[in-house]
Length: 422
Image (cartoon, rainbow, N blue to C red; front, side, top):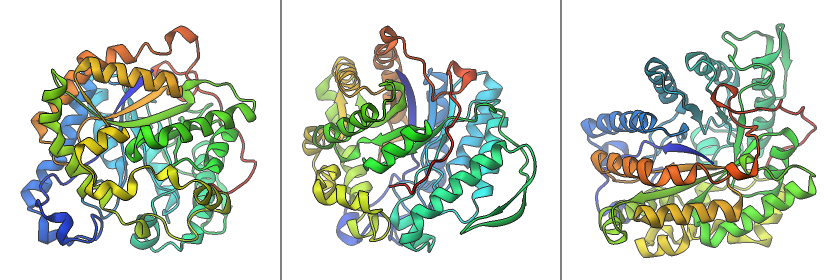
């Protein structure tokens, strides 16, 4: 199994009564709750934690994108990934550079995204993995003013433009519904050509998104914040049923999963060290986004709406996150916490049960201080990660969604056959 280090850039010093005073984590007035030196320190800590993880042997460095929010202050992951691409290349660290989120549903400059990512592939000499989420409603529709009904259509068009801009030998004109360019001829292009950098799509479990990733031979990511124990079974069973119906190989490496993880010498010590930071993250972070800002009418296509209406359980404990205790989060599987044995056995069991080939370990979250985050990263890397990396070695699958330079056997991206995403 591939194990990547997953990083956000949270503001770690929100007041204790934040959730009582503010409607959401994405509408909080900046100057009311921040100190400039703390924001600067949080960015420095995030970059240091990424490099710390790289030196300890993680297979990749994954960074997300969230505009105008205090739970993740990285509006463009490519900026951070460019820094670690250079630093890891200088130090000779062969780790994947993985911007998990470059939201194309909100992008009004998709060619800029194409150029940024191509630049990172050049800076890392072929280690880029490109993640393209559709984008969250509050960010795409409220922050960036994209009408909800256009989000998916923009994503579809922008993705095709990015892929063509990366690979088309000659300059070409693009006359799309949302973007028109008399000439497209970007510089640079990715190092990875034939095939292009691996493409991953992150989704919440909508069957149309799953089908789309399979049709195009993209990887599919699912994040476990809603609770693996309450939502995971339905999501992963749906994915692998779709794989079977599509007559695709049940290769575990086509699936990625993000899990919040904390490790200490004993289960009791882990809870003592990390419980308050886990509650901070879920209560003041992802759980503090009201549903009416997370999903807006028109932003999900009809198959997605049908799936949600049939089975709202896909959202797991989301509606309770703002008041969830550490025990609630553990019971739901939103977090895996304990001794190295507890964590390794739990994650290995989940990987086997759900055929997860790529684990994105979120080891700094919420208010967790920098030094404690480093302790968590270090103990995970030394005592847990070695027991996970061998999970799929006995089944002989090639990893088709990983850069060739790093041992992957990437397949060409399949041509577009149609359809809006969900």
